[in-house]
Length: 228
Ligand code: APR
Image (tube, rainbow, N blue to C red; front, side, top):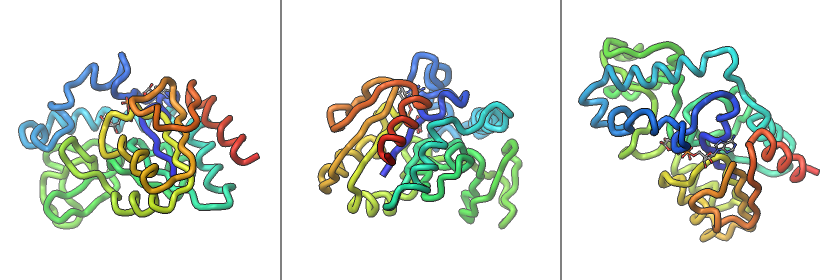
C-alpha cells in the first residue's frame, strides 16, 4: 500500500499545501475548500479550481521520476500494489498507475450535486455549467472538501487489512483520515512501514524506515532497491 501527497508532484511544478510557499499560505482554505464556501460563493471556488486545472494542462507539468517509479513498481512487483493518493492532479494516472484510488477526488472531473453523475471536465467550470446527464445547472468540482468523507474508504481499509508493506510519500501527515492510515495498518499487523519525504512528517515515528530528500531522487532509488 502506497499513500502519496502533494510532495510527490512538487517537482512537476505543482505547489504543496503547507510549505512556506504552499497553497494554504496564499488562500484561506475556508474560502475555497469547504461545502460552506461553495454555497456562499461558488464563483470564487470555481476560480480557485479552474486555475489549478489550467496549471495541470501546462505543457511542462508532466509526471516526474517519482510518479514513473511507482508505476514501474506496480508493473514489476510480483504481488499486488495499491496506490492511494490525496492528490487531485492526474500525474499518477498519466504515469501509468492502474490500481489507483483518488481519495480526495480529481481536478479533471466535475460532479452533479443532483444526480451524482461524474463527468470528465478538462476545462473551466462556471456557475452555469450544466450536467451532461440531467442538465442541472450548478456542477461542482469532483473534489473532497474539508468536512466531507473521502472517496474509496471501504476499498482502502479492505486493502490495508491485507497489506504487508505501507509506504507514505510526500505528505505532511496532517489531514485525517489519510494521516491515520499508517496507524491503522500497524494495528492490522503490517510487516513494515516506510516514509519517503523531504523532511520528517508529523507521524514519522510510526515508520520503520525513513528516507528524506526530494521525491524524484528518493522514490526511484527506493523502488530500485525494493525490486533488486
Ligand atoms: N519531495 C518530497 N516531499 C516533498 C517535496 C519534494 N520535492 N516538497 C515538499 N515535500 C513534502 C513536504 O515536506 C510536506 O511534508 O511534502 C509534504 C506536503 O505536505 P502538504 O502540503 O501538507 O500536502 P499533503 O500532505 O498532500 O496535504 C494533504 O491537505 O489541504 C489538503 O486536500 C489537501 O490532499 C491535501 C491534504
